[in-house]
Length: 458
Image 1 (cartoon, one colour):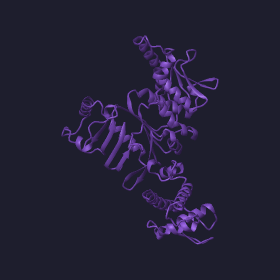
Image 2 (cartoon, rainbow, N blue to C red):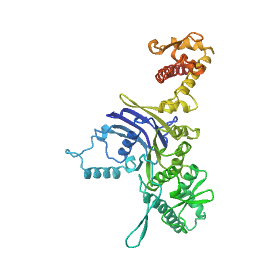
Image 3 (tube, helix red, strand yellow):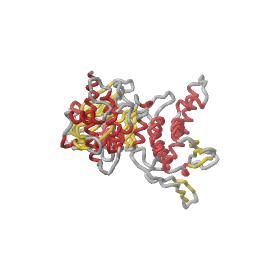
Image 4 (cartoon, helix red, strand yellow):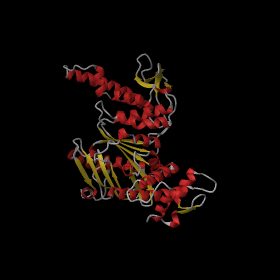
């Protein structure tokens, strides 16, 4: 499990540190990268994938340092400056040389994160709605499942294969352990991949459950139950099929995988399903004992996924990293460093996606005002004029950027108070642009950071 990555002098990423630990300094098993398009989410995930599929780091690598935990939770550190000294052919690495070097690394360090499997599910959406049935000249009829953006026949075959493999493993286990007293259902609940798929899918859809093969019907497809009606996989909606396809593909290939990377799992999904999709993938890779068996890394620009990640039940295991593009590369902010308490979804949506600006301004202004009103030695009271004067007197205040007179009732001077009044008492005289909101929010955040620190210091 990866707990820390440091990028240095990367042409596209810049200098960036990513800490995957929670507040208790324990590595999280689920990492959510959030940000608008172009913020570098997919680029970072592909770099992590390439690293895990790679060999010793060369001096050209954008990765300077990686810390990871082995299966016994021992911490290991990989340093580019040390691995770049590893002897390599002077005329460059051929594919054969690379494969030999990687094999040597995996033999020498079987605990190394690069010796473990990594899976990457790329962003994709949209599948053809029906299977295609082909008849051949010899009168043989074969069902060939085809989906645009995925190999449909492989997905259906994978579900069937996993069910058959689960049964074979049960028979093998019973032969080796004749004293085993648990039922078939108890064994499957603890050891079966298909059972994990069933649990995950049922948690996603209240009225839909996975059945599998029906011997009375076409054995080249699988079935689901909606209420009391059995339906073919073809009759699922595109969103339901999307979840089946991506989930099955990952589950089938994930044996012994240490890292599962999923890019934009929200594609083709209704907002109410986006709220559940993170739990679906976590359940898919969580065993009967409640332990997540692989580290999940997810890139999203869905505010619904971010909000679900902020659920209190996820705080110890899920890390949200908010990404933004800057002139120097990519900037990262973690939810651990947001200003408002209780994991404010409005703050996350603003920081990650640049939306809900007015709502965030309301919360931020209110939080600052309330904190100052209750702070020992503060001259701020419940009157708006008092916080207006306070903001104007702060060192962070720049009159050229932050002054905006409001004379509609009382006389106020600062942009934050002007916007507060425009929101609370809208009229045609108070016009607030998006840029005004960004400037005011930036000022309020800078002031509030210092106020929190001043309060903490006593």
